[in-house]
Length: 167
Image (cartoon, rainbow, N blue to C red; front, side):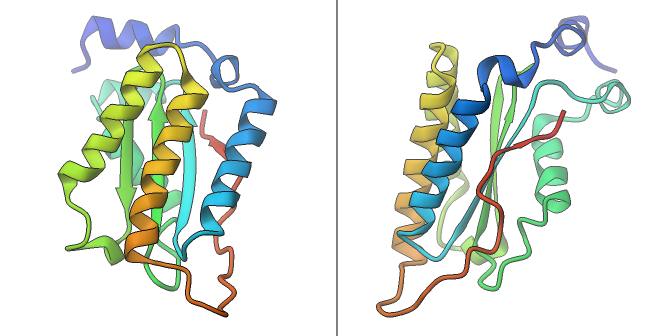
């Protein structure tokens, strides 16, 4: 069962657009586009103000919601299995990164968690757009290392660059 503090945060969560207005979302999309020009990977940014009450009542974790979003947004559906989802859950103040199986053995769980923590610190400091920008840049470095752009090859943009607001 969900605790009263968590229930309260979800019931009275601020809408995602208060922290990420349209111009902020456009700048994040531009960052993703610029990032993807530097490697063969795909980055998707999804945010959710709060969870549906039925999921909250079942005490679904932000990690589980991120995995659901990874599946629903089809981030797994890239030719090189190199999609990465950055999931921001505002009510719980959590960031989760879900990476496709192409990263197996290349990037450790600790490396992904380190990026999440970096982003969470910036978010806690009241800098939501900067938090996402830092996360995108850190992930870009990993993608450049493990999925570099090949000379003369044009990489297809397989997933949308625009951020997705789930709720």
